[in-house]
Structure formats: C-alpha cells, structure tokens
Length: 57
Image (tube, rainbow, N blue to C red):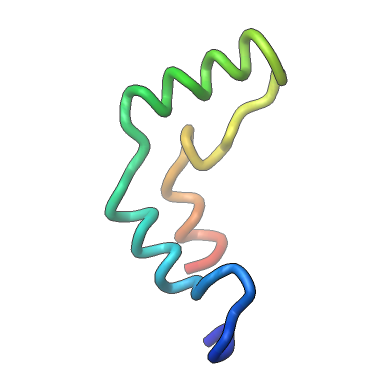
C-alpha cells in the first residue's frame, strides 16, 4: 500500500524483516551502552520491538 516505487522500501517488507530478526543480546547491550555513555537516549524499537507493528502494521 505504499506505492510501486517507495523511496525507503515497502513497509510490509521492512516489518517482515523486523519480525524475522528480533533484537539480540548484542543489540540490547549496544542500546544500553549508547544510553549510558553517549546519547542518553534509547532506541525504543530495541526495548519494545512490538511497537513497530503497532505503529506501522
């Protein structure tokens, strides 16, 4: 539903990839390090991967 030539990819395919590759321990740790040592903010889709489907599904 987002056109025949989407700029950033089809939402349906991006959501499928997201579901097939949930955040692993490395990504969760990286998110924590970035929060604690650098940006002091978090990637919410690492903490709550279900939000992608709730927002764009």
